[in-house]
Amino acid sequence: MLLQYFLLGVAPIIPALDGAPECDGGAMESTDINEILKYINERRSTVVQGNQRNGQRKDNLPAGKYMNQIYWNCDLEKETMEFSTDVCDYPEQTPQKSQAYHADYDYDGEKVPSASSLVETWLGMVDNNALTEYGNGAVKYSEELNMADFVNLINPKTTDIGCAFGNCVIEDGGSKYTFYCLTNQSYVRVA
Image 1 (cartoon, rainbow, N blue to C red):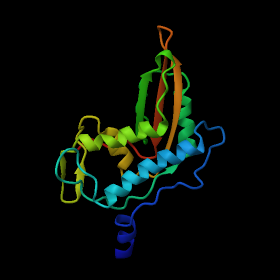
Image 2 (cartoon, rainbow, N blue to C red):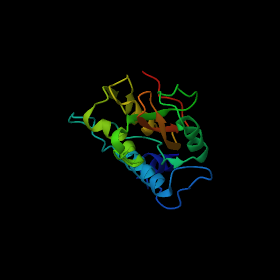
Image 3 (cartoon, helix red, strand yellow):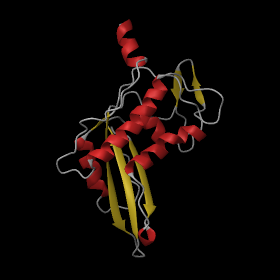
């Protein structure tokens, strides 16, 4: 049992860069999938090693335990694609799955950010915003501003993710892009 703890709780997480799937019927390219997984798994590795700063505070979050790397899930990607086809509104919470969602207006053909840069933004929220309830090796999420996406992507129980871009037309004739991700774990509950 001690060996299991060592392997899962202390060993660095190696990002899944080779062989990430490009889903049949999916829209995300392998290079985008690999970048998304790289950012998430690198951040998870930082948490496992106890090196994740807690916002602007002088201390780090407690080291993560039993946290493995995240893999791409084609079924989750397809589920996000179904939502992302023409809907501009924030999606209703999906039972048994956490979500991350970004929407913005695409005026005058401005370049839409890459999927990996949006994921990097979600994960980077912890660099400027602190989780306030932690200690004794545990962290409790209590609805800190802009931290829900970070908390759900770092959840140790989360092992799968799928994402998709969408585009919809708004009332004034402009367009809006969306980026929507689902994981295989339910939304982290507020402590």
